[in-house]
Image (cartoon, rainbow, N blue to C red; front, side, top):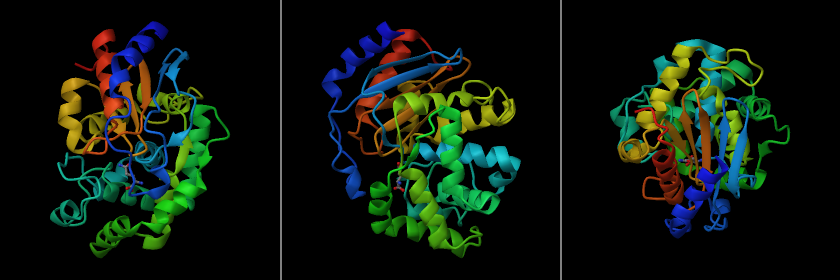
Length: 301
Ligand code: GLN
């Protein structure tokens, strides 16, 4: 596996630094676009990495997968009544899409869907951001996982669009908590900093049919199948079709430049490189996952 990762790294070297680093959250704009890391955590408990795979970065929308999984784990299927599972070609923060969908976010990985998830998690736990941090610490085995407060306050100072989404959801009666509380917890979830190594380990339950780090069922097999399927269809936003074509794995991206991809019954791969394409997906990250599945032949197809 180490040889595979070295091959992948060499293949994507010319693409590292391509794309645009997210700057609508000012604290993210200072990250060096030349960073690249990739880690593989196998279902047998081995971890491999290359480049900056131990460097923490801002998880951003990667948090949406974990928050949604945690909500399903605590609350069963109930949250599905408040959001859908269809792809959207609109940007992840689209108000138009939410208006068309009458306040029922089209899927859990659009910002509107993640706001609904956070709202439910806040009702269920009283501390959505804290519950997610504990979950990520437990599953990754790293107790120092935490929110980067500088990133959180930077996003909160520019939260207008997410605030608009939350208010629109609320106007349709699909939010139980106060908009300000939901936004605060959502932003603190997105601002969690983790490395590729820790993220790959934390997401392993998705490759193990829902079995968590302690060997107990976090999600049942059916729920895990459905979550992976939703990632395949919606996890890469408007780039989901192209990503499925090139990579062939369920995945989720974040504007911090991270991508988590699941190879069921084998491993989870997490890659990080901050330069983004027009959909908000890491350019070098997508290329690295394409090289990875081409070299290994590991795909769900
Ligand atoms: N925190 C970011 C936002 O709400 C997450 C977006 C993303 O990573 N795609 O805009």
